[in-house]
Image 1 (cartoon, chains in turn blue, purple):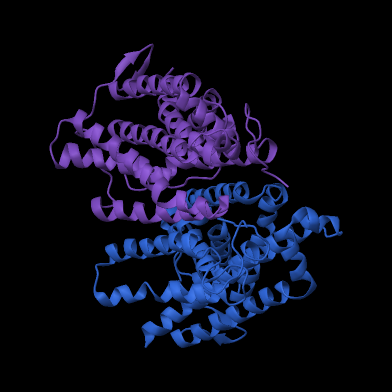
Image 2: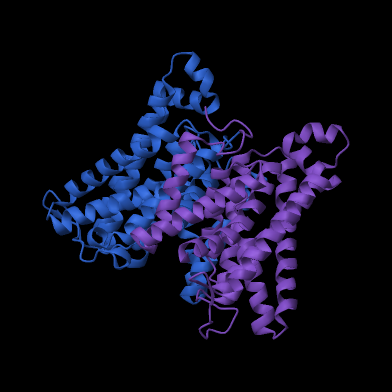
Length: 290
Length: 290
């Protein structure tokens, strides 16, 4: 039972990551490989604020979201004029630089040894300690993130995003400030990813750079793409499938080293197969890059 | 002087990887991420032949290069060609390629383990003294092979029918097809040549330093930086880009310490993507920015 709850916490965390990336990749057409970097920024900021400054959990979360949104400007302001795969490469570079900082700025981030002893969250007097309570907390966060994405992708704002995705020049010609939309969406998406990072840090109570590598970004991209980019439920489905499916490997009794490789092989081959057979994903209607 | 030698050694294998990637990129116009695993795969095949099967090193190297060429060719025939047939976008191809990379890299990890392996016995090799700097014989070989191969590729591109066809397809695949050039064959030849260069680069690095399953992605990222600095369209430009990048990295190692060399490389990439996405010597291949 505890095990099932543990998996559910991760489903919640990855739903936030996938939904927020879909806001960027699926709805606005900007595929980013830097999502793990923002996820990590949230985790590190939150961990440092609570461990070193003794700040409460919620302040850590907000701090992480703020730092991530701020740093997202560093990527979005200059590189949003790049299109499609050139934008992908620019975010790739940002991911590598940020990982390098997590891994090498020993005084601040603890370098490869990471930050231990991150306190369990307490939200206005509610001490979150058991797995069940964590599922509730992660659930609340996931629902909030989902609502934000839902609100932003429907209505006039969402229509503007879709217009930019389909034809940016046309969107501009009808008076939409495409750059401002993209910057806003990138900041919100990064802040949401950071909130997932805070959750992760306070759940595991220990973080190190290996959780925030390019592979993590690719995993989240796989969730969005396999579920269906640009659809409301696609990323949720993708997150659920890709978190729970590899867990079944555990029951076959594979050694953990092999299981880790096999898990990535599953992600990778699902990506390839989807791109060949159904680029729009399981429930989606929109294929990236047109 | 030592710095200059280090730059030359680093630039030579980098240039091989970058020119291979650049050739494929300029004819197919998408980021072939799985190029990285050709580099890794060739090194490990050579290891398998030379150390595990006890074949003579020359035979093992040939085996590795042949394996690399087959791997690259298979990806083109089995994956990219059918996808191009369905007019997949550059972004879809990029994602499929990323998936392929993830699968194959994990297969290498599972087969040979994640530990660092060496092709040559680990006894400390005497360096040769040249003008006050030290260099290993393998490094000298690497530089020589690099110069020779780049000269051959330049000749093939400039002087042979195949080279003309490759440049025609790179310029305008549709037009080339109308003129009776079999574009698919030409692209396959490009993949074969590019993969051979990657395989040689991987084997040289494995001979000179060591190998690990993730070596390819690191090398590919640097190669992409070199290609973008140099401009995709010319071999000379890419070679100069590699030299420039290797020099910047060696200076970074010298001034900041080796842990920051990747961060410096990607910072350079970001600067180029933003300021001059077509590179120092190139002209824009296709639309890169809005």
